[in-house]
Length: 253
Image 1 (spheres, helix red, strand yellow):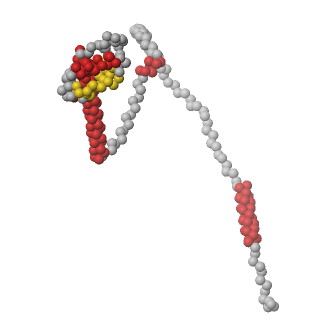
Image 2 (cartoon, helix red, strand yellow):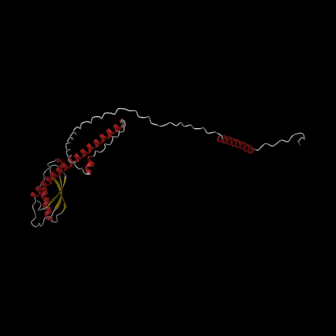
Image 3 (cartoon, one colour):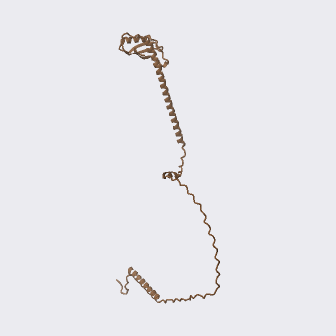
């Protein structure tokens, strides 16, 4: 409980009241200053302006001797105008067509672009490149050698074939010289024989492989082959064959 002799404590003023009080005081001060300045401005005396008037009366003229008249200059003859030579007409300029004029205009040359720096050569890659080139050259040389060998083989084979044809023709010619044709033979039948011989050309055996259809002609041809022993030898020993397949016709050339 509160003691009876103690005074009551006033509550603290609110913050809004303080701000309102300060604004009211400020407004009153400003209003008083405006009133004082206005009264002082109305009671200030205006200063007088003095103007001095100056008379503008011109002074009296003084007597002076009259000036002598100046002598007039004699008129000089006007110079004749110089005759200007007439300008020569300029020769007409050739009229260029638009396309020709366009062609005659020099096109601006493009500025050369700086070349990028070349990479340093790799010795390992260079070695591989050389080896690949050498291998390619060896392959090309080997292919050329094979082509040449094939060509020579073909030429040799053709030459041997020609010699073989000559060899067979020589045998048939000798047999035909010993052949006696039967009198009742008609047409041009063909008989095929297999002849076995020795390297010396001696006939060992004669076998009828295909009949001509005329028994008398087949028998006469077999007798002629045996009678032609020894048979002619080939010009080249490699053409010799132990067994020969020979075909005969009565009207063969």
